[in-house]
Length: 260
Image (cartoon, rainbow, N blue to C red; front, side):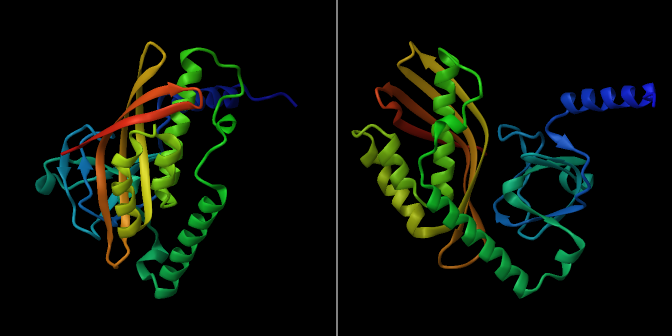
């Protein structure tokens, strides 16, 4: 049977469009609901862009496009001054028909799923096998160093979600620096449960191969142990000063800059 040339052309065009717009899909989502206090609607799909508004908990918005990290939503221009905006996936849940009639049993099921994920994280441990992160090609020089640092960033997000920050810092920081961050790590562990994080950008600048400045754009939310709604703990940039040691890249200092 001869193949239809028009089908081939349509397939090629689809692939080209997918390559041009990889971050968003036309998957029908419908609406999303705000589930985090002090969340931000931004003018562009990045944390450095202008904040349009901080919507109230439970506010519902119509979705225009769904991305891997950002959802493009429809806004009331008279209310917000914009017809469109962007919400990070950390701030929302998708609203389907059945979710409008959510029951207590459904909430219990969500909690059970979250607990199961946390247990799996603990069983896996904080450390990551870096070979599973590196591409299946031999890397050399700066590319290999970047893969190692990206692995440490991944370990950090896993430690947040597993409430194992103190262990992460103990394993990944130089000994002189670790005591400076242990109190903050212990405070998050004591105060919040089911901590989630979303890293949108990582920029690495090397200094003669033995040092690096790492800028991490991220959002951190947590569910208070005393009860209540999920809260925004941090939205901004972490900057790590890292040094190369025989055991790998270690964090030697951390500064943070919240976005406004």
